[in-house]
Image (cartoon, rainbow, N blue to C red; front, side, top):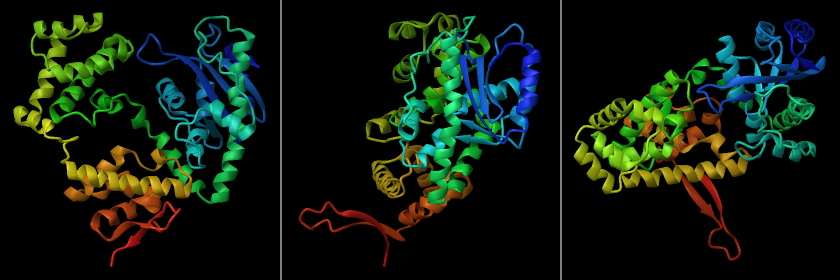
Length: 398
C-alpha cells in the first residue's frame, strides 16, 4: 500500500494502532543538508504493510504517524535504528518507544558488530536482498514501483529477523541484556547534536594533547557553522583538513593559506576558524611542554605503561567475546577501557563508567576491575604442551 494523502495516512494509522509488533524503516536524503530529510516511511505488521510518502504534497500532517510511534503497546522493530529514531525525534520531539534493534540483537548472537541488514537476512533467512536501489534519489518524484518494492522489503523481513533473533536470545537467556542495551536508544540526549561533543565522532586517540584540544575546538566550530548554514559538516570542512590544521596550528591567514585549500564556507568564516585553533591551543596549559610530551610517546595523555595495561584489559575483552559469542565492540570499546582505567586510577565514581553498570558489569566489568586491583590475573593453560595453542583463563590471585 502506498500512502500519499492525509486521509490515507489517518486511516492506515487507525487500523494499525492495535498492533503489538511493527517493523519500521525509512528512506531519507541528507547529502546537501545538515539534517536528514525524510522521504519514505515503511511499516509492516499483522494489519498490513505500507509505504508512507513523507514528501507527497498530499501529506501535510504526520501527527497520526507520531501517535503510532509513541504507542507504548507497540514494539517497534528497527535495524541499525539510530538514524531512523533521530529523524523521528527531530520531527515529533519524542523518541519512538519501545524499540527492538535487530543489529544490536545480532551482536549478542555471535554476529559481527554493525552487521548490515542484507548480510543478516542472508544468514538467518536465506534471503538475498537486492541493495542496488539503496542509493536511489529518494527525493525525486514520482518514485517508481521498483523503489517502493525495495523499500517495503526491508520492513517485511525485519519481522522475521526479530523472531529469529529473539529465539536465540531467549535460548541463551540473555534477552534482558539485549533489551537493556536497546533502552539506551531511547535517551533523547543522544539525538541532540551538541556542537561541543562533535569531536566524539573523530578518532583522536593517537594525537598529542595539544592536537586533541585543537581538534575539539575545530569540531565545535565546524558543527556550529554547519547547523547555522544547514550544510553537511564535511562541506564546511573535511575531517582531513581538520586534522591537518590541528597538526600545523596556523595562527594567521597567511599561514592558513599555505596549508590547505578551504571550502567556501570556511573561507567566509576564516576569523572564526583561526580563533578556534587559538582557543584549542590555549586550553592546554604549557603548550610547549605538551608538544614535547607528545614526542616522548604519550598516547591520549597516558604514559606508555598505561597503554600496556589497556592491552591487557583488551585481551580479556577479546577472550570474553569469544567465550560468550557477543561482538567485541558491543562488550567494550577502547574508549570504555580508557574510562575504566581512568576511573580506577583517579578513584572516580563508578557510575560514570558503563563497564561497571548493568549487563556489562555482570559479564566483564567486575572482572576487569579485579584485574586492575591485582585480585585476578590472566593465565594461559596448556601453553607448553606440544600441539596445543593454550587457553586463556581468568584466575584468582593467591
